Picture 1 (tube, rainbow, N blue to C red):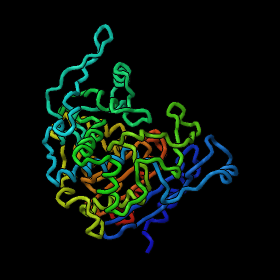
Picture 2: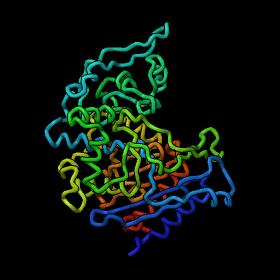
Picture 3: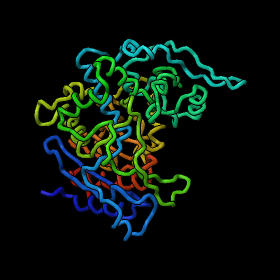
Picture 4: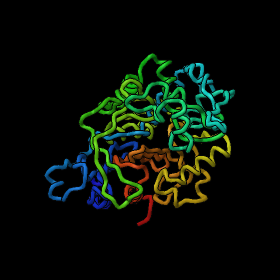
Length: 417
């Protein structure tokens, strides 16, 4: 039987992708429940397009329509897998949340804290005396940041003669190991490379590279065969909007390659929306799909993922400020109701229920190319929305997200018409 609001969601997808060079180039929206692997499936738009804007007639000749199982860039959707991998080690008793992470990755002993530049322009670094715990890594409270989260990060990288990102094609371990903390561990919440360090622990303890570990311990049990760090020639084009010229048409290019030598749990996976839906549905179901052989986590570990893990008001305020800058289309409208948001183990907890119908305490996160996932245990539903458009939070994509999520919950009977 068709999902009650399927036609309305279909219409939103078609309308949003009608002008692929100016609105949403493509969208794949999938939803499931614990007892149903697919309650809604819809897609619209284009997988590949000429680099610059062409006529509709030429687009029909030269473009390639999107398919539900096309391969997309996941960026920070990788972090859920990195967190799951660490939680598997937790279940096995090989790590504990309060462990000093430098027990497993010795380079963490040498990480310094950034204190600014002196009058001569020399970098000031201070010895870190606070242990960086496994908990602080998995909750982004260790003090590591991404280059776009602090105005001095690029200057620090230049001084240290490293790239700002550890993921680049020519990156070495130095990009991760040499970048200092920007905050003392456990004082602040700040989005950054903590999950990359976390999965260095996974590699050290397991003796496997991250690709092998993910394949054997997460993807194979779930029957997933198309998610990987490896280059995939079938991957769809990336769309680039220009924030300085929001009315300008998008540019489409082939994906930027990642480092082939070093893989991290913070970004880098490529894969399909149906496969990612399997992953989040396993979380919705308490760690496994229908077959017990698919179990990737115990139910009690999944329960732990949904508990708030920020430990002080400053961390919560940092997260609220980050959320208000736009991690989803609802945050800018919520104001003071953001007070109850927190961070779980693997993603953000949405706090109170949203106007869309999303339940309180839902676990969710996203990737830089506007790829989104939500696990809502209150209403027994999970969903993913993939688009592969940069920059993150581009308004046409957020508008679509708000519409399809709202219609999804209407179809579940959560919202009144």
